Image 1 (tube, each protein chain N blue to C red):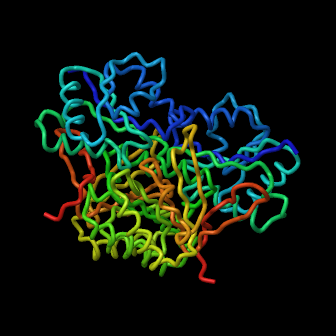
Image 2 (image 1 turned 90 degrees about the vertical axis):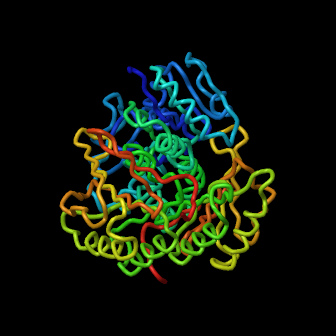
Length: 252
Length: 252
């Protein structure tokens, strides 16, 4: 068996964030497996056989990729952003644990990348410059009771929040419930950032507050960053403000 | 004024994780400012004037960099990993807020990168595959009471923990206190990972439990990942196990 399986983060949107390691793997792979949006966005110089699939079939996609690698293919499973952050990496390991015993002896590697939250944070300054929590708002993945518990815990610890999967076309209620809860826990004046399609042509960054956040601006390609009590805003003439969370924590 | 200041994450250790964007900026800069370890690790093709400084002088370094940019230099301020995660980005914005009014009108940009925690997680599987918290253990930056509160909050929410700055040569007590507290909160059998010098020749990854974690293995170049109650280990014959946290949260 000379096959391998590498789970490759492409970074968020732009080829300027694709690491040399990821690029080399994409160009050496015989087969590339992933959600169609990401498979379609690969560099044009990639010659591997492409296997695009729909959103929501991560388990089937993982099993398919493992079967290919087992047969000797050099398989890159691609994810947007970093594959380890709400991406394909966990799905692959779920498949390995439930699948054939031989699968875990295959040559398997995760290739790190710039994650969406890091790119979003960079666009606005350094909102994640101090302790923070990363929470997915998807009730597809866990019950609302767990999400609520985690939003409460993050707020109890006064940590900045990076929120993945805030909403989809159909799923809007989770976002409204989360905003209501966070307003109660952190105050409506707390800084909130909506970062949509980061690294893509249609990128849009909105700096607002929890109380004034317009849920209509939030899409399935958005990520939210909610400040701690220490997160600060620097106004600029005619430009988007900077937002950052100081390195030092002082009650003042 | 044609100067600019870009705060550039170099990724953790290896040039294979340096993004094309970061590489381009390093090659276009007239001046590069940073902690000497990072300034020394730059690609050999970089021709900018190098300004290396010691650890712990982030404020002075930031002011120096802003002064250079104000005079028209093209300045890259470099950080290991991602500059927005306990790196130079927050330090620069602190300097801007305290410094001259003109500074916030300069051309300033943060350039995202692969962060140390993403690279460490990738080496072992997908431990950050579900909700998690990122906490610095440095009592240089905040009082122990705040750290304790956040470790408790993260545990209350059953979130995986990525711990930055777990110890230095002198500062060892914070680590021992944190391990004791986390053992009490999460149980001694909880999966713990020590990732040291990730991406460098001397990289060392240890998979253990909170109770069995050897503090002597933790250096100032280490990062810890502490599992949630759902984090799982996949044993492999003669190889390091995989560790991952499933995407789905089910009480079972």
